[in-house]
Image (cartoon, rainbow over all chains, first blue to last red; front, side, top):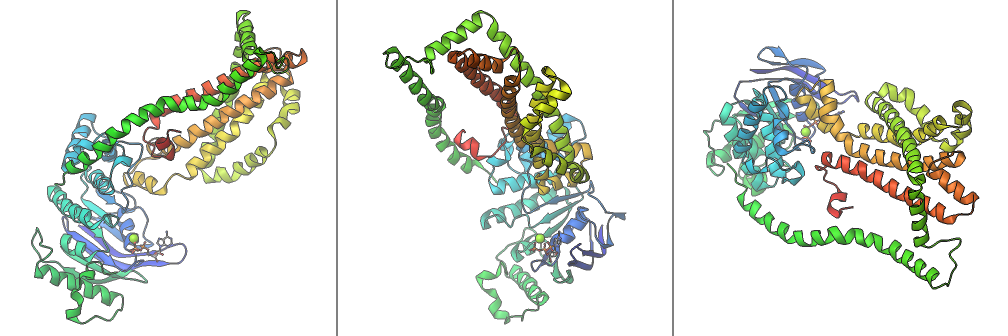
Amino acid sequence: MLALDRVSKTYPNGVQALARFSAEIRQGEIVAIIGGSGCGKSTLLRAIAGLDRASSGTVTLDNEAIAAPHAKIGIIFQEPRLLPWLSVADNIGFGLADGPATERREKVARALERVGLAEKAQAWPRELSGGQAQRVAIARALVPQPEVLLLDEPFSALDAFTRRDLQDHLLDLWADTRPTLVLVTHDVDEAVVLADRVLVMRPRPGRLFDQIEINLGRPRDRNSPLFENFKRSVLTSLDRSLDRGVPDRDATQGPGQAMWW
Amino acid sequence: MISDAPVLQQTSEPAEGAAAPSRLNRYARPLLGILLPLTLALGWEFLVWRGWSNGRLVPPPSRVFATIIDLARSGELVRHIAATLGRVGLGFGFGVVAGTLLGAISGYWSLARRLVDPTVQALRAIPSLAWVPLFILWLGIFETSKIALIAVGVFFPVYLGVMGAILIVDRKIVEVGRTFRLSGPAMIRRILLPAVLPAYVVSLRVGLGLGWMFVVAAELIGASEGLGYLLLDGQQLGKPAQILAAIVIFAILGKLTDWLIEIAAAPFLRWQDAFGRATGA
Ligand SMILES: Nc1ncnc2c1ncn2[C@@H]1O[C@H](COP(=O)(O)OP(=O)(O)OP(=O)(O)O)[C@@H](O)[C@H]1O
Ligand SMILES: [Mg+2]
């Protein structure tokens, strides 16, 4: 279990980005974190990843405190961040530095196959499209088989079609080993399609505002009325978190609502 | 599962179409560069041959070429080239080692940068030739002072190149290394070194260029052999063909050694996604 206990973060410049954020995330759960811009979502994720230390409070994974990057925790950023001097295959194998070479090669080959890029194994990162590059980043993070995978707006730079493809693909990959996923997103649609639970954050300082369980079986039908209902409740909660007036219930169903900003 | 098949089919077509012009470019481009000097040389040769100029101060290419042949026959040429190459090689070696070490320390370790960099920058502001009298006093008129001068010339661009390259390594990529918990040495080997390499190669090439510049200065100051000595000797004895011969050989050696660095680095830089690749510069 991933436990966040009153995690706070004040940056050296005095900005209080996180205030006493607490949550418990079950092994294998998919949690989406959503909230206004600058409400501390990235800060939270970086604290869980051990990239930045929280000013106070603790992050524990199975009762082990996380203060530095951990072998069981992987992270995928908004940009693929591939190493341009390594081939696609070597990028995917980057986190497998130790272990026999043959085993490493096998794992990489399997991962390449799994993300549908087997024929790109020897390509350079610059030869990939944005979506392909992000798939390589996903494969690179998944190959060491982390127990927790953190994703910071992983698909926000992609077009709507590619984004949907990758959302489905991510679920597909998740089903292999069922790691815990913590996904930061701006996209209500994405949160509802992926998550078991949506955490809504409130800005200045960043803290937990609301939680919404998405009790929908998978695969989820993006067009079902039930799906729409969940989207609406997430949107309503988001609006409240930003102290916006909640619009008339019937008026919230316009097509522009998928992206709430 | 997502398939790439349609994407692949689309991209393969223009690639084939592009093959033909690129093959043409491969031969045409160097030829274009040679066109201007070749025309000028042939033109001058023709003028002297017709007797419209006696070519005493500016000897025609054929006479320069003959001088080179003469020097080569007598074994002089090899001796001079060996002397100069030896000096450049040693000076370059010392300069590169010192510049790389100090640049890497300053780039990696900010305390060292605060301590060392201001001094290095101040020294860099001194025109390097100003060191000559001091070097001669300290190290004598012979090889050591020459090599020291060349090494000083090579040092600064290499130092700056290495330090600058380390300082601008993308934090985001370093973070990837951190998430995979690379140790300090592994971070250097797997992230910093490859990231720094392109800029390092450039700084080596700049350094080598300066090395060639300073070897001339060093040999003009006093030498009994070397291409710079050939220059001076040609001036004192009024042999412009010999001066031009030395200049031509400098050009060839300079280009050749630069090309060697480029060739040696090429396999490590194939990944680069830069403007230069597309234009073949
Ligand atoms: N390195 C930093 N130094 C100082 N302040 C920072 C730093 N990083 C973020 N902040 C501040 O902390 C707050 C939270 O930032 P954070 O990046 O976590 O927000 P976010 O929720 O991820 O926003 P977005 O949705 O726009 O990505 C912001 O007010 C931001 O200005
Ligand atoms: Mg963010």
